[in-house]
Length: 127
Image (cartoon, rainbow, N blue to C red; front, side, top):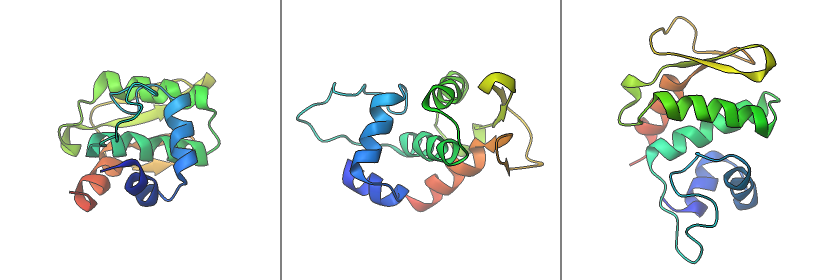
């Protein structure tokens, strides 16, 4: 999926998408500016990371805190399927803890973020 379709899918402007890509490393495997002049092709894994980043931003997290969450996510989830995704728990000082198992709660603002749920929706709704 290209950047225009991704921004439409996520409900953000193209500028907001580029802002996230500049400020938060690891949202896509290709770094910001590394593909200049070439169309970006986003995977469902990329879309899942972007949706999680937007969810965190909407909950009031700074880009620095979002970076910590994405680092923890990338360290623990390979993105092959939503089934092997886990849950990110927000800890004090904007740190995040990855838990592989558990589905009791899917989302509690500023506390629990089920990557499995976010990714499941992305994988279900996109080719």
